[in-house]
Length: 127
Figure 1 (cartoon, one colour):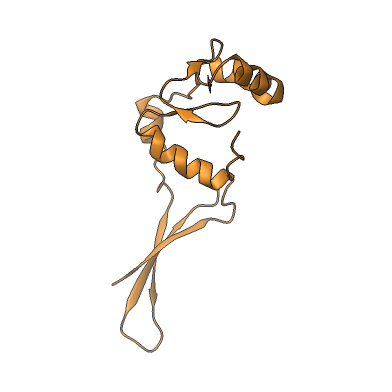
Figure 2 (tube, rainbow, N blue to C red):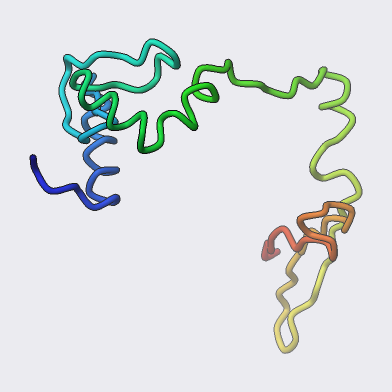
């Protein structure tokens, strides 16, 4: 068969061809609009039984069940969304620029987010 494609080339091709209904064989990476779908996960496609067996042995065995499971989402009610606005606790600080008459406003967010324990400087706006 053809040599395997580099991951970035394959990703670019998949992005373009996916819009046209093309499917990719998980066994040989060939593309076609007429592939057989995996009966387990319904997410993987194959040229035929040989490619299906090849992909199953290589990696599909480990992910087929996971791909078959319905996605899970955390659901939040409207009250909890409204009670936690991203700008809750933010403070706006006006900073005069030295040597000019310009003033900048900086928005600081509190440091209770684990991603930004020291707080977050959100942006600067010149006044």
